[in-house]
Image (cartoon, rainbow, N blue to C red; front, side, top):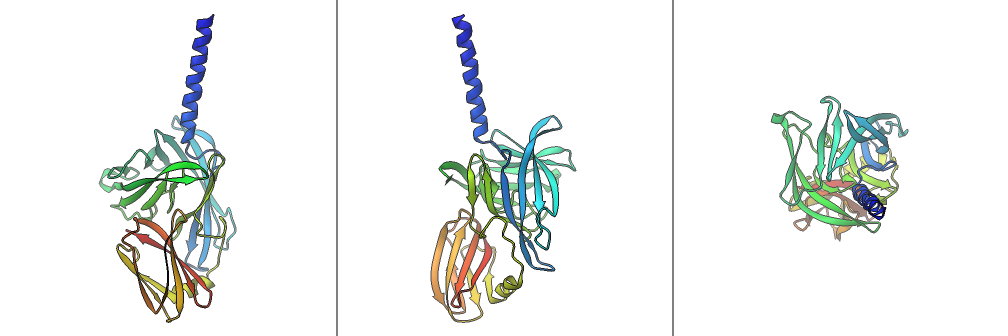
Length: 298
């Protein structure tokens, strides 16, 4: 009797241990929500948002996975204008997504990867494969929890962009969850939240669902020029006047990594110290206008 009881307790312990270990890095727990910026250049120069929500567990081709719904706001800012289903799962720290045209799951992230490692985005035929290389790894603490981060670079044979830079375990790429052909329309990440991690915000917008319509944005585009973008060791900020202004560079982790006050039409910003990835540049002009732009370090 004692032996049976001991075996029973051991089985329960192993089950609970393995279950908790599996859930510790659970991709897209039910209710998890991502918000990304989405931009329309025409006709309204609208900056709105994409929202992705993890809805429920399901099965595709015999694979246990999560059903997520992607919502896109309408050009007039109306939320939930367009939506479609996504299917994803995680196994051994690798995240897969379902590609309808192939009727199979394809690798999206490999959080086992270390500096110098790489993986292939196998959604495309062999001759068109895209390779994601890990340039460096680190950790980030969000609400008291540590998550692995990877600084990645995408080598694409078919025009895909928008998958470089920071990827956070359990959240995904800080530009956009998936590779995209147009980085100006999808991303970067605004907010992520779930019932395990809590809420994580990048600080690029006042709220997760901020929507702005473009008169100010058009003026901003005329008022400041940044070249080159993407950049490597430096970039130039050119304003159309010689007034004083303040420049801040903010990382995808919402950390100010550079700050200066300057005067003149052209200012050269050294960036050798910055790691590759996505940044927000914020410029405060002498007449108290705030100009923000997304920049990329190669």
